[in-house]
Image (cartoon, rainbow, N blue to C red; front, side):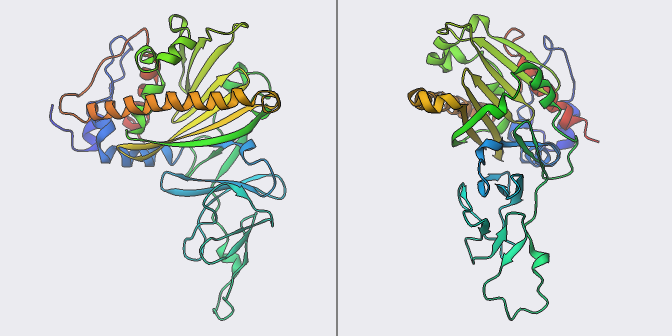
Length: 362
């Protein structure tokens, strides 16, 4: 099949919405072409509420977390009124960073790491070294640029454009499935970032099915009941769940994928949040944040360390297969495939949502 050379051509060719038993997977060009990537940034990631973290990651007044989200340097800080504010991590002088890594502003100011300009936690410019001789300079004109953000049930979301929805509607649905105050009951432990050499949708597709678990994750396969692995989906998220085989209390492993790129991995006593951030057509970043029940910190540090170690091993396995799959999608040997009705309904649901976003733009 000849390469499809424009976004308009691709979405006219691959916009058909068919039932799962009849559907084809996304054409490979959705994963490999730069023109698709550019449209995704505009139409999916710029105008959606994107998950950042739980507010427990920024627990104290003056504490902050930093990250690169798409091409945006971001800093989220807890201000003196105990509210979360999110700014571009960009000094208004000459673009220097306010911070390179997570920390605490012990003096209640953020200081540019380039020339020392300082900002209050509300974003206002406070100190400007050696600027006495500059004419017509008003500090009020050079405060930090704030990124629209909301905190809903301890979850922090940001939007780089005009948000399509007032709040992520997924929150109310999750509340019905999880214990009351589930998210606020967790304490932040640590964060790990991974660079994966594949398109972000390859990583999402892989997350959304258990079909690959027996071959790709042999150890994980012994911990989950593959025979009883279930998938539920709707217009906002996919939920996969399985009994934990060594549990005495009929515990479940729950895996939520919230469109477009937020994941919640839930085990007894532990919440792991993941977010996929596109970098290029052939590369993405995945951020793992680990949160645990308070008593875990006091009684079971060994469990926490083992949990993080095992997650690292699973992530290495996923990164290896996703890199190989992306090479396959980039090959002239592949164009499109089909879905397993029994095991890939989650991938199908995500790809249907994706087609809706990309093929029916207003």
